[in-house]
Length: 477
Image 1 (tube, helix red, strand yellow):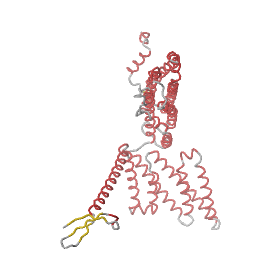
Image 2 (cartoon, helix red, strand yellow; image 1 turned 60 degrees about the horizontal axis):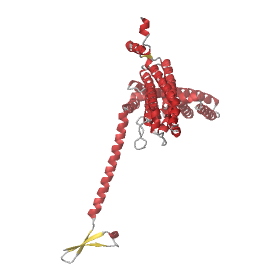
Image 3 (tube, one colour; image 1 turned 90 degrees about the vertical axis):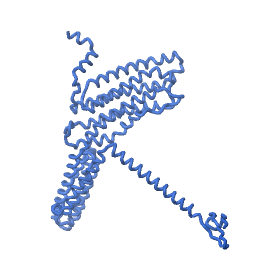
């Protein structure tokens, strides 16, 4: 028996075939089916592996989201619980007979008003309830007027009222106060009034229908508020409070990290990568929308903990504005630090100690302010930190005034090389000035919110007093 490989150009695209000759002289042709099957199997395995990697990566991202803040997973469970409780009115015959087919409105209410924070839930619940009641009352009044006007004028009265009220309500959304507090309610008002006015033209028992819808919407609002407030509540006021503290800490780290990066020794003349905390100012610059939203929602929340009914949530926005005013200057400082044109190392040494000291004192002031806001207390340590910062700034300004004469003694060209160092130093001094603005905003917040005094250790206070005025004891004796 003989075996030979034969290639046929006109068949199978030039794929080699095996010809086997048997003793009787007949020939049999065998294809490379094993090779094709192996390729198909490898392709299927690779697809499964890629799909498994994508599913695994997606699952890890989902797990990380829940692990970073477990309250997000709890929020999902709370929404499911609220829907399950409301659905009882639809599945149970006695309750269903009490509210009729309008039980579906309770489920819709839970879906549209349940929010992550208590303030958001109260905001939407109050707006939906108030808008539904007011729109239903106006619609009933218009329905009575249209019914008594006769069939000829009834369509025009209904259409005219829809046009007029919808136009006025939509225009009111451009008013800043309405936009901030009642935007959702205006939308619900337009929707409810239009539905009741249009459906009332064909429905005889309009009053009963309106009553059922108001009752079911009230049930949905009550279920949402009960679950949101009683089970692991998330308060918008506390979220705003924590956000302010985090931003202050990040801003403190950014100031110190930028200055340390600028005066760090460069290896082989190459600029070192920025430190981990050097970009913390970006979080401060990007937090305005979150601060405004949380401050608006926090005003709807009931008193909880140390956050009373009249807690000055608006002042948190002023503190955030002061921090952003400082962060803009830190951003300019970061741009100088990462610039490709740098001052020579021997020039930087003249102001390295003074700049790093001022940066450390600025970071300390911001850290003390963050601790004060976090604990909702006032302490003399913040004022001492501000005094130390001002002292360091004055010393740096003195060194800065003496620097041109020192550089001129070395070489006239060195003064030109130090231009960027002058810029960085001036920006750092401006940062210290804006840090004082943050402290002033924090002091105003402490005054309005009634922060308690943290000087609970009289011995520590006396020690600090002696450090400031050591002759006080002698004078007392």
